[in-house]
Image (tube, rainbow, N blue to C red; front, top):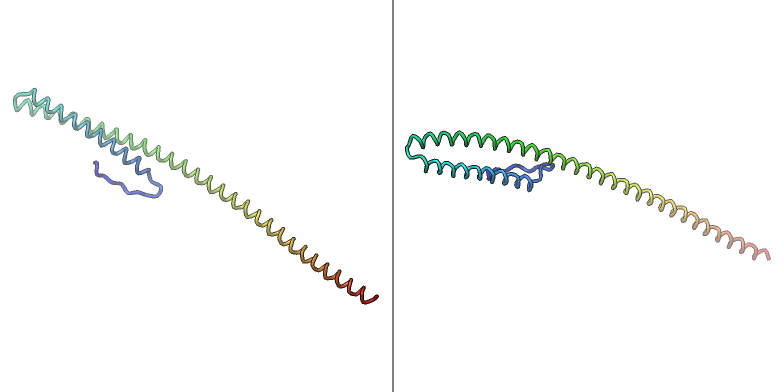
Amino acid sequence: MATTKFSVKLRGYDTKEVNEYIEKIHKEYADVCAYLQEKVKSLEALLGSQEDIANAMVRAQSVARIIEEEGQLKVGKLLGEAEIKAQGITSKAEIEAGRIVRDASEKYNEIRNDMQKIFNISLLFLKETDAIKDMKTEDISLLGSETQSN
């Protein structure tokens, strides 16, 4: 039980949480086994005859089986709760990831729009600069023709 390994997937459970949980269950199981062994030893000390020991062993095995079944039910319940918790964490993470992507997309669009405005202003500036340049050339031409007429 302590050496059981699970494969890790992209959107799986938190490996650390699962490992801690399995360790907790393993410890509880070991504690129950140690408790049962202690009780069996106590019964053996109290019973003197082989028949009494055999009967006590049957009863202890029966109790151990019941405890093991209850433990398995408890483990199943705890695993179910852990799965529900993991699904909640996954859902929250997916919602947060969606928000981050949406925010990034909005920021991208804002920057893109700002860049387009800057580009348009630059084009307008260049056109106006060319117009001013052309104006000066015409003014120079007019001044030259006025000087030739005089």
